Image 1 (cartoon, rainbow, N blue to C red):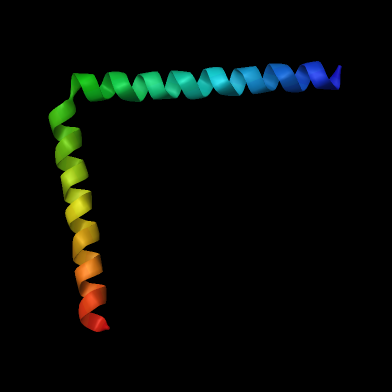
Image 2 (image 1 turned 90 degrees about the vertical axis):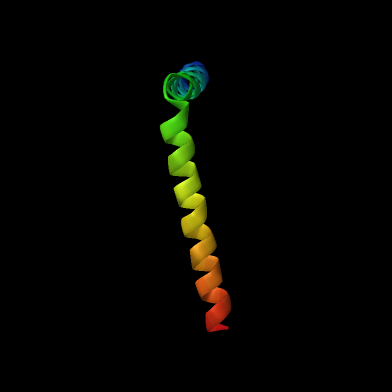
Amino acid sequence: MGQSRRGVMGLLEVQVSLLIMATLRFIQLMAPLPLLKVMGQSRRGVMRVLEAQAHLQ
């Protein structure tokens, strides 16, 4: 009984993760430009942090 319950829970976890991935992909298809802008801003933020760390050393 315990093994079958664990198997069902594992299957549900896989289904939920697939649903999340599909939802994220769908959102990216609907609004690719704002997501790309956010990614670019976060990348610039990381570069600034790395530059600041390099100057401090």
